[in-house]
Length: 612
Image 1: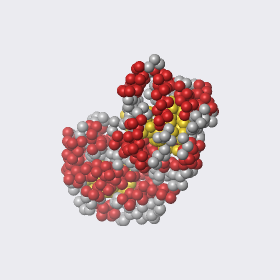
Image 2: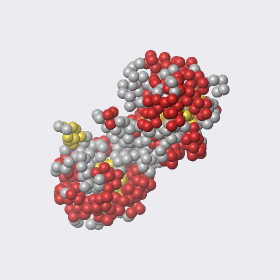
Image 3: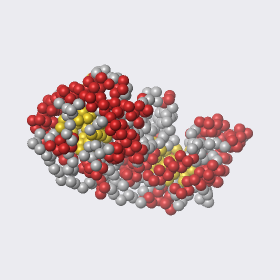
Image 4: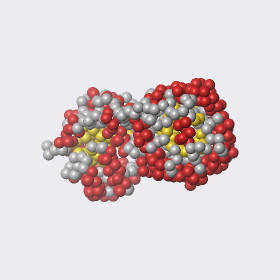
């Protein structure tokens, strides 16, 4: 075969269709690893390739879209990664012979990368490099990196391939109907990043049908001088008898193939729902529509996102709590659990009692483990609007997707909430998740990055949102964590992300707290220590044995066991801890209501004494 890029610049090339669609149609179960079929059913994979080549495909992609370590681990196939990719390349090579180029297909890792997720860009590069090396060993002619929603991950994949070999790279993002990446990045911006990263061909695939993709391709054409590729789905899927069916006809796909070629696209194919019949129709349309030679140039445009960031609001100007925190004032916060049901009157009455006592803010925790409660966000709004006391809204990543969290936070800001405590959230117990699937796209480090970006006037895709938000961003820490080094590193990462204060897990051991402060003093953030008031011996034993990140000294348990009234003794312990912590922290957060009852108010009165 002649050189791929040289041929692509001379004429339009046709890529194949959807491997997954065809394997599923041939009987492969949807809940298995399709990549493993390279080893277990190579004839099935080869049959799909042969049908696409016969239909006129000039580039066929290996059956390795999900053959990276991250995606193979759940199937127990990580140790067969090299064999799966090498065999995938060899099957495609045997089917292509001298009639088509073989493209090593690489898809995303399926996890969020920093700054949203736990996986670093360097780790991503290593994972992509591992797969690229195996595909190179299998004998591919080029690489197609496809269905990426995060341009940083795609850049990591390009870098990884470049470190392995000099083969041509086709880099394809996936976008929504508005033309932006699924995380919000505009094509004018991600195209520039992909060009700088060294992609030879830049394009789109998946997510949308040909009509929506065509409009985005037009925007991309004016933003890059690189050849373009387009591989749309066969329309939007419709669910028919429990199956996702793509209904765009071969003729419809072919009509848009002509438009893509007229618009300057050099590599045309299809994604989900595209069959050899679609490929054949696209091939006919391309041959009738392609220009004689060369490809249309483009005028480079400057990216907008870099210049779009607004100046973040200074911490003292974000909220009353932020102002007092910046002045170094000692802070007293009350922790008020959202009520069960719609008991807003009860919530308002409790908040008014705290307002009378002059608390600096009311912390509203998320407690989804206790069913039937008002959401923390709704409770915080009721308190601020009906009582006039600032709140600190605890917001957890657990069971929320990234874009949902962004929307929630923008909504919270729009209705006046300013102080947030960003937490990962504890895993739900099995009994609470029997009918629900957990979502865990990012953790509290990623969520802190989201809030900091909103505070700079940008969304997670780097696009301007107008005025920057004014969130005071707090994060959680566990002084008694089982792995102190890991806990310290996580706190450091939260600070690097832009955290502005820290709220600890309940403190029961001053010596352990001092050891933690010695390890973390360099982070330099205001510390607010939480205090829990033991309601009973059973409560203390539960905290000591079943609450992660909390250690209750045996001496305290002995005191409670030997007391005439465990609740009164619990208050006495909390007062002693509060008086010791005053000189060590900038604030204390006290539980009020629930099992703490009025004893929490008593502790607040102690903390609010004139010595404050």
